[in-house]
Image (cartoon, rainbow, N blue to C red; front, side, top):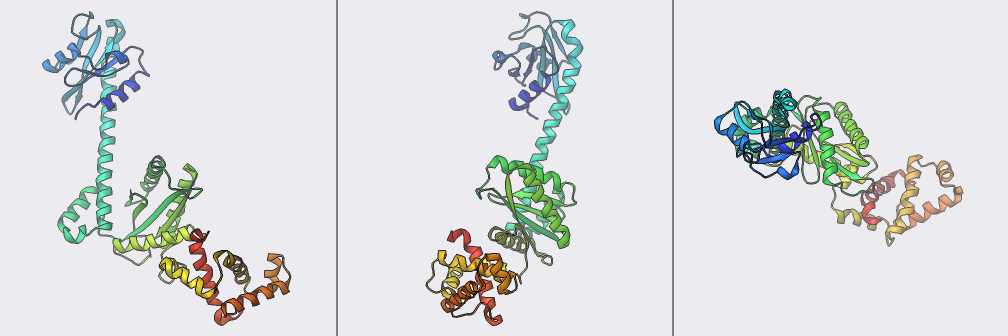
Length: 379
């Protein structure tokens, strides 16, 4: 392991909170790479070189001119896997610093080990993220089956049991993309939560968070999605939009496509968590090409602009929510029943279909869904 300046700075920062004397860390070349005395950084430390070259267990320097670039104090090797990777020194007279010598050496090595473990964890996490991404988006499993199985086993990913895919995107309250710092925070918090679940992983693309989980029924996966939404809301002023694959799909690539389709539905409706359902009319409509959705509205509401269509859509939402009750709809809209009837008659004239008749009501219900899916574009 190489003792980097970044790690050395962190160690000096932590140790300086405990001891009052100046602390220096030297690399394998004897150069001071971190110090509580910034003026000494970059200079050669002759005492450190002696420890490294002669593999000394410690070196007490009595006078400032005893070694080039060294001051009186104690210096000890920093060891990792039985190899000297640097030297730590503490400035001061013998009685002040000797009693701290082995303590700061041990603390340095503990901090170094902790940093190494974190680094290894990050390397393993990135390797697992790449594996999951290649599994879902590529043909890795079919093209290299043996390597795929070996790599999965090495990374601790069970690829033999059925999975569920959960896809989510996070946006600010005014529907803007979140910054990278917020993405990193959310990723960290969600990963911590998923650690409590068996075989639950998360990785990020440029715009999405994708979670791969062991197979669960819809109630369980919905509960996980709700907890993710809660964690995001708790840690930042953001909105989470979540899509979940269908229960019966076993292929992860298809599961992702279905989960992503459900996510697109979450963007376009008031329901921010959706489970893929091939029979869901909302989902079917949102997957229609944009051009065809616009054409549907223009063919139904002949010669009306988007602004003219909107009040009819809002009226129809209430009308169908109240099961076609003229009395209840007029009460909610604060208009006379005759006025409501006039507007419905007017709509029937425009479209050539009567929204009050059972045989044509489905056309207007579909129009409501189409309009809602296009609302952001229209407005």
